Image (cartoon, rainbow, N blue to C red; front, side, top):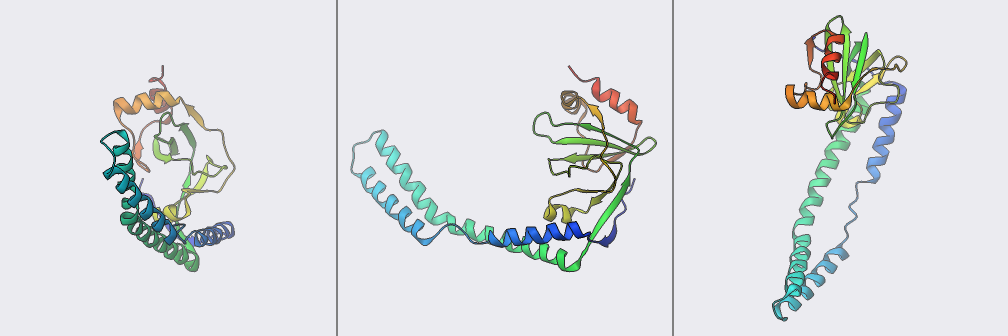
Length: 219
């Protein structure tokens, strides 16, 4: 299946959330590091350097020396990290503002027949296996950013740039369903032996047979 994306207008709830996100992020733009923090770091670094240089070699020499290095490192590297954060924040705000002003988003509508889910076992995320046609499967990975109405049989997939900005992958278009459950440990064992499917990867396979194969790796 070649995912086909089409442009549509933002729904009112999407636009409302985007504006809320813009307002929230706008308030987070200022750095909490002030000039006084550099002065304090300089004083601490100077004092620790003096102490380390004038006491006999011992654990305390190491302690004060290390503290001095950390203090001076804070003075040297923190401004650059703040600069990088400001650049990333500015780019994010520009992208978010562009989406709001444009008022549109690219989505792919999925009409599923059945959905199976294998919950996270370690830190790999939840895996959804979606049967969108007979013997046609779509894999969807989730790192806990799905809406409460998902899984559902009819939904829209957002395009990648919107996902990175909005923080959600899908927009539900129908009511929530109870998915077929795949044992989480069985999924983990399956992936260790067979490999993990890619995000939004599609394949031709029988839904029931694949679920049985996954669950056969349990125990």
